[in-house]
Each structure stands twice: as structure tokens, then as C-alpha cells.
Length: 539
Image (cartoon, rainbow, N blue to C red; front, side, top):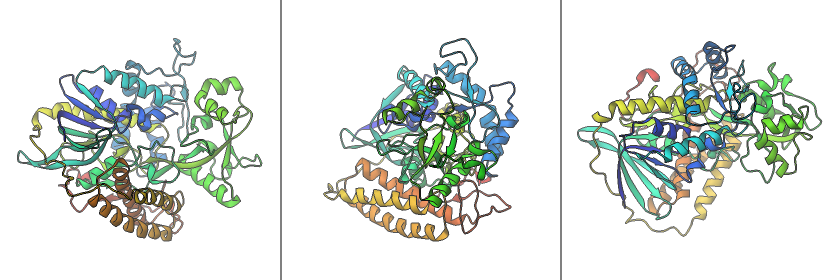
């Protein structure tokens, strides 16, 4: 077992983790960990862009109002205003870091930046790099962080659990146990501050737009460490993922609908105006439910997204990634509509934090999709997520830097003890439980829910929790077992939160309670081993 010591430990290599690392002062020694390659985070696959007020015809108040409207009454105004008002600064920082956003007069030109419009936005405010914004942001920030001598990069590392407890007379987070893919060992990483930037938990569902790393690791670890979580019932299903047997997790950007693409049935008839006057530009929860309704009503495998009214040149210039991917599969989107289905996309709930990313556990921060800041409410508005990563990553790094000298350096931690466990000869148990979990979450805790389905899911999750705990206690850990253990925790939190909300609001649509309550409240879950509550007002 190796022991690593740093000032700051960042778990996650997406926009949130990278922004924290890059904003920390040069004298701060940082470890940044990735489950796979540095590009394996969800940021790398994001297509649409980043929402910010960059046009003189737009306004902060408009962006704030749109976010509240999409969030169905549950957004925290302080978090919304903090994010939106710091948006332009975040975009200018990304530009300074080398992100090549698309300009009106062509890439590399001197013209203004092209701004797209997406669902829920009343103005064009999505700055983007064609339809591969995440790739552009990820690549630029990774290049920058590689050049920082104070940042040590560790790839193919999976976090197992936080190290926390009394140290130097205070209860705080002191690091984490990290499983090393290459050696099979579980090492100790000690740090004054730990940042969870591990993304969301969409892999709890059978169909998802997310990469394989989105297994809710940070949320599960923080919960086991005594932190509260909130609003886990609000899983956003992206309305338009490509439906094709050879296309795995491929997202068809919402920006297509922003440029006039329409959703149609197999007979070519448009259906979104039947559900919402905003049509295809309604918020994602509305569009996803409409597609789900039409698929179930007509017994369809998918619906279709049609942008054939635009010229081929326009499509190739604006959506080169989507065009190339579909063409590779035999679909020319300039001539043929695109088969699409909804898929789990974004975890709106998470670990409760303040506006600096601080959690209930001193020394522990949560940033990005792992966190619950209050920004997204009951439904995240398109392209606010990357903005949140940068804004809160910046805030967290400033808070860490300002308080680092007051945080004691951990001296020691218990070694990882695997002397009483054996190698498993029944890995089929992991594969079976993984498949069962994702299938019943899709069937019972999906886009449209009932109390009966949720009760079924709760029964199944209770059985799986016991089975996986027994397996974890008796066999040496592997990447698949670590992720399955975390997925069971977050799925349990989703089910418990969904059962406790007796209304339909935003992404939580419950047939037994089809109307929203007059009093909008967050669903706050408290672990049995909860640490001292630091942010009671957030609850």
C-alpha cells in the first residue's frame, strides 16, 4: 500500500475538478485523480455548450428567470444569482485558457461568438464550440493542468471511501482510499482538503447518455461519510439520444432543436405542440415526458428528430459531430430524420453544499454534478451544468486557498486491510446485480412513476443492498464491485426521495399525485452517521 500526501486531493477530471486545480495557487500541492484517462469524464462528451449572458439584448434577470422557470419552483435564488452573475467571468476565463468557441465568421476569425438557443432559454445565450463543446473545454483545460508543476495527475484510480474522523482534535475529512487499476492495491491519499468532482449517477439506469464512469461515486462516499444529500428524485432524462443498435450513449444535441429541428412520429406528423406551446423548445422534462407518452401510446421503439429543412452545408457546419456519427451509421440527417429516445442524463440532486462548495464534513468539498447547490431545482435548464462547474470550481478553489493554512496536514490514516478477504470466483454475481439494478430503475423509477412501481423498486433495492454488502465484506474489491456498491447507494437514495415526494414537480412525475403542491420544498435525506449540520438554512 502506497501513501500519498498532498495539500488538496481532487477526485474527478471533468470541468469541475480541472477548474479547481487550475484556480489554486502555484504553491498548493495538488493531486488530481481520474477513474480512467483524463478525458473519461462526462465533460468530454458534452455537445451543446455553456449558458451565460453575453449579448446586449440578453440580461442577468432573464437568465435567472428562465432558470427558475425550468426548475419548477425549487431553485434556490441565491445559488441561481451567484451562478448567473459569475457566468461572463467564467466564459472569459475559459477563452483565456484557450477554449476555441465558435465565432459568427468562422473559427479563428475576428467576429463575435455565435450564441445558440436551447430549451427553456428565452434568448440565445449558449456559447459553444460547434457541437463538441465538452471536447474543446476538456482538451484545453487538460493541456493547461498538465503544464502545472504543482499538480500530480493519477489516471485509472477509483475512489473507494473517504478517510475522516478525529485528527488533531477535530472531526474532518483527511483523504481517501483509492484503488489502483494497474496494481490491484488500495492506496491512501492524505490531504488537507478533498474535492469530490466525480459527476452524477446516470449509470443507475439501463439507458443513459453518460459514459461508464457516471456511477455516483462521490455522492455515495459523502453519504457514507455522514453528509446530507438533497433532491435525488430529480433525474433528468435527455429527450434525444440516438436510437441505434450500434450507437452507445450517443447524445443528439439539444442545439438541433434550437435551430429548428422538430420531433415527429413515424408518419412524419409533429407532436410537441400538442403538449406545450413552446414546442420543441420546452424544458427537457416536458419534452422527455411527451416522447415517452407517444412511444407508449403508439407502441413505438423511438420517435424522430427532423432537421432536413436545413441545408446540408448548414448542418455540417453547425453539427459536424452529430452529422458524422449518424452518417457512419447510414443516416444522412440532411435527408432523413434521426431516430431518438430519452435516456438518463443528469443528476439534479446531490451532496448539499454552500456557495463555496463546502459540505457538512469539514475539509470536504463537492463540485459539479456531484453537488446539490440549489441551482437546478426540480429540472436543470440546458447548458447551466458546465457553467456551474466553472463558477463553483472557482469559488471552491478560492475558499480552499484562503483557509488552507488553518487546515492541519493529516499525519496518518488506518491502512487498507484486505487480509481477511479472498479473491472472488463468482464475479457473475456482480454482473447480474448490476444488470438487475439498472433494469428495475428504468422500469420503476423512470420518466413516469407510480407509488406501486416505487415500492417494488424499494423492495428490490433492499435485497440488493444486503447481497452486495455481504459480497463486499468477503471478497477483494474490483472496479466493478466498487461502482456497483456506489450505484446501489445512490439508487436507494433516489427511491427514498421519490417515495417521500407526494406531488408531481419537474422531473418527478408521479401518476398517483399528478399536481404540484402549493409549498415547494427540497427533499433532504440525513444519514444515520450524520456529522454536525453546518448549513441548516440550506435544508
